[in-house]
Length: 115
Ligand SMILES: [Zn+2]
Image (cartoon, rainbow, N blue to C red; front, top):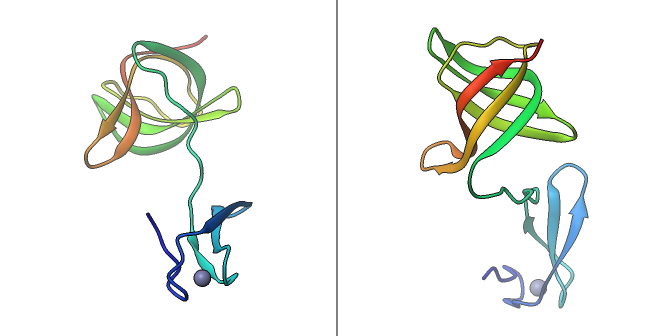
């Protein structure tokens, strides 16, 4: 539990912020405490399928691609075990995982180009 560095109060308020997601202020003394980060959309457990455009590639080799898929209002950080390039329209199937190094991402066991 965060506390105010100024007065030590644990009575904090959270409000939306366009750049940082949320900002956290002390409700007692009114001082800024810290940025709260963007709220993450909930990710379903189990097998999922998404279709979208590959808008950003972080890493791509002959048999691996990690990047961002833009799918109907959602941006999906994903990885898959085949080679794709920015601009490709893909259908990906797999599961959400919490990778210890790279965080929450979609682990696509299957990726296909949409014609
Ligand atoms: Zn305070």
